[in-house]
Image (cartoon, rainbow over all chains, first blue to last red; front, side):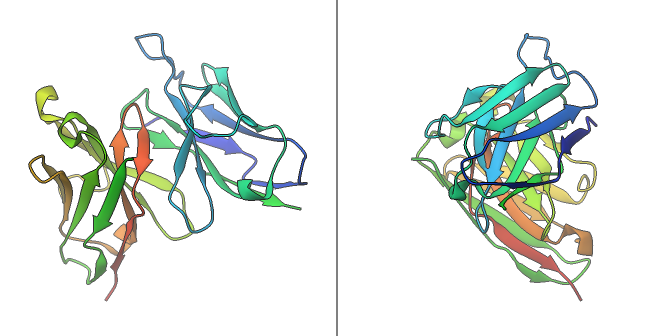
Length: 112
Length: 118
């Protein structure tokens, strides 16, 4: 199975400051169709996960533009340009290029 | 609006069985691949299995830890997804989510808690 490794696992941030989460895969996530099926999810306290980003850098409907995704191959990044209080929670990367789909361990974002 | 509502969770003894349901609305269920994903308390997300739509063969795939014990099925006439869980183990304790599948989980339900304990 493809191993997804996130860092850091805990990220204390100051309101209004940027935040960045790294995700590395044990194999390239480029699929035979040329797409890279790397997603990012947010899970707020007590809530279900919500997809934020699909195919590396595409924001889902309703996702604020302070969230952005980038990367290629095996290295990916989720950035929050200015952290707001509602951004507190866990963030997971997930690959769907290889079967079975696998998730990163999660990164806890909290306010300093 | 996509809605997924899981039900059927509860407390069961090791070795026991449980059947989860997921009622879907707001989209064409019969045209959608579906997943089950679980999350143990305080832990990360783990994909459990997937069922394709019938026109794609209705193929079902399972994660290794549940293969041979869990069975996924769907009833397109009822817009409902199922997860039959047999020979349950304490390590199956988790919140179980049903999700729509499109190169990864897209929409998620609120989940249903399954607790396996003696």
